[in-house]
Amino acid sequence: MFFQQHKNFAFSLLTMALLAVTFSACVKTEFDQPPVGGDGQDIPVNTTIQTLKGYHEVNGGFDLITDDLVIGGTVVMDDRTGNYYKTIVIQDSTGGIEVKFSNGFLYNRYPVGRKIYIKCKGLMLTDYNNLIQLIGGVVVENGQPTDIGITENQERNNIVRGFLGNPPVPKVVNIAQLNQSMVSTLITVEGVQFTKADTAQVWADAISQTSVNRTIQNCGNVELLVRTSGFADFAVQKTPIGKGTITGVLGIYNSDYQLYIRDLNDVNMNDARCGQSNGNETLVDISSIRALFTGATTFVPSGRKIKGIVISDRSGNNLNNRNIFLQDGTAGIVARFDVAHSFNLGDEVEIVVSDVELSEFNKLLQVNNVPLTNATLKSTGNTITPRVATIAEINTNFNAWESTLVRISNVTITGGATLSGNRTLNDGTGTIAMFTNANATFSSMATPAVPVTLTGIVSDFNAKQILMRNANDIQQ
Image (cartoon, rainbow, N blue to C red; front, side):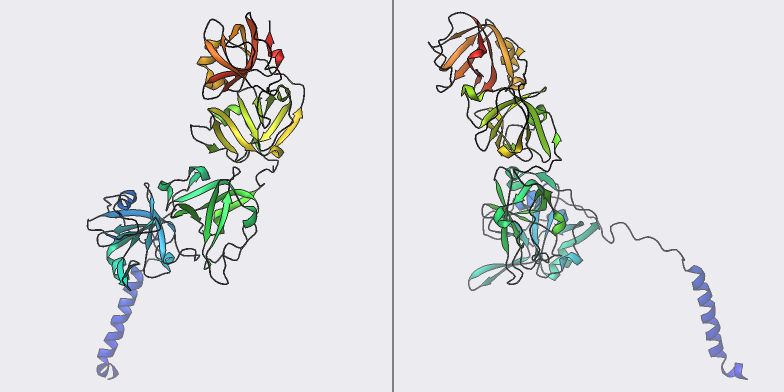
């Protein structure tokens, strides 16, 4: 009777039980792993970030994008730490650009390492004091146009999230190498330290929530601003006291470059400051230092030192009192100190050249403005055997032999009654100039009337030349 009255109910229970058994039999006990990089998709692009930035025509103006342009880039800066606000920076292989939004907490959707694609049609390009930005549009307030970030509606229609991965490896540079192509890209600046005034200072004013510029410099005193928002969660921390590397996104304000770090993991400044040695530098050949120069002023990488024999003679007074010619078994180079030195001919000297300027002075290669405290006398009374060569050989191998000692046989000296000034050397295979400073101790010596054996340093002053060291360099 019960079954008859409640047969529909009983049938329902039986059906539910069967469904439960069937469902449980279909349930997977091991779940699939989520796709690497999380949810995302890739779509085709038809232009580059560098090309897109070229659509911005007038500084301070607003350019509506009317072409069906699609760019793709990886997020290298987000707003997670508060150093950027409602803004991210994306980068492809050609460059980077700031992308401004009308809302915040962008790191939840577009964290560093996320690939994103932007359909640019309908968006606008502008710049903030020469920093090009991609924005949502413009409104007029009190007769003045004001940019607005990409709106939620534009975000839904114009932005496609790609997959999450690693951000691009930052380009390692020194301050002297910074240029416009690096703006809005991730870089690592090496061989820098905060200036004394900005050492051990808070990154920004968190109390008044005011942005602050701090200054970093290399050992050649070339400077770069590091700008930090007062809203950054690391604003109250102190800047480091040492030297090293700093990574961030390069910005520009008018003509001044500015670096923005993402967090304190971007800062690695634990080495000794300029003019100081940590004792851990690697000894390298002088030839390897010369090889770093490719035609423009650069800086020696961190952790380097050289050692060689002084082949110049300060007592002869034929060169600047801040300079020495140093030669090892591979090459020679001029070391120009920040003050006058006391190293003598034949001294073995070790010099820490980490992060110092490598440049030419009138075509003569030198490590420039080396703190004298970086140099250590290792021994005295050493000799370098001069390379015996003809003038033709010197001219042929001039760049490789620059700042090394040579000896020329059967050479005549012409051009004046004394050695002072420019004279011409001729050994029958070719000619080369010889210069003697009027203040040199041997400048008043009579020019030899017969061929001699001459020892000197291969040098350059916008032209090939030989420098004598003292009167003993001429042997008849």
